[in-house]
Length: 285
Ligand SMILES: C[S@@+](CC[C@H](N)C(=O)[O-])C[C@H]1O[C@@H](n2cnc3c(N)ncnc32)[C@H](O)[C@@H]1O
Image (tube, rainbow, N blue to C red; front, side):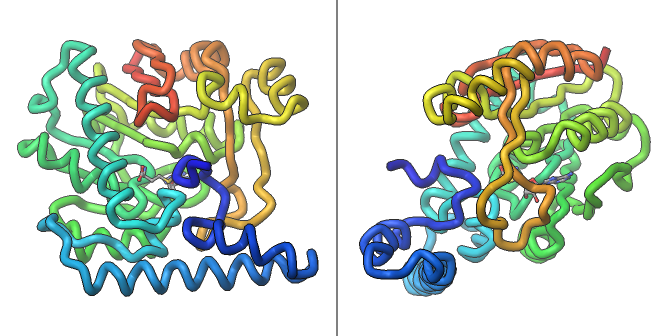
């Protein structure tokens, strides 16, 4: 099983493998406790391994705990590889719209987490001023101390953000709308529209049918196809993230119609981000 892909599942490699064997001998009521202990052990071991093996990158890495929060896995290498691949995908999406990455002046990473994308994308846009916004104060504190070339701003559950109207000519939010319910999504789309300059590119992602059709339960799939959107509450709360942060799936038709009321949808690319989430490229109307 590809654990990296299973966002929302708190149990990570190698703890997942250990759990699989131990759970057979542990009563059901004690299994959540076992899971959380294995998760903590995984984080400690990963941080220890990082400390003794040097990284080739000049920028420091966040702790395994912060990485797991955005990434669904603890390892440093996987975090770096996904960050680089997503950066390449964003650059490709920008180029496909006939835009030069070097033209952007003011860039917002909406839901920057601990900077998995920002750390790579910023080097492709040396003239741009970078901003990161997130609801996670711990991740932002880490970014402020370790990725100081960008400015960071803490979001509340609901808009507004601390930015003036028309602030950004590029906004990207990777795997953010994949975690919000519909009403929060609509409020944040409105807010992104407020801070986007005329002609700005806005790149977001969705858990789409191209990847999830075969992974959802039959009733869930039926509901997704009927409503165009499916919000799923996870069994376990995500470490350090609020209760409103769950898992959402979309159909392409829903996004084109509903998000299309806020922005003009230029491109919808199945699995356009890391061959996993669908990519949506939009601009102001
Ligand atoms: C799966 S993580 C992805 C983080 C980052 N985009 C990346 O790809 O590494 C989703 C992020 O969205 C953030 N988030 C959720 N709702 C948000 C909101 N309304 N405003 C800003 N960030 C939000 C979470 O705190 C989390 O850092």
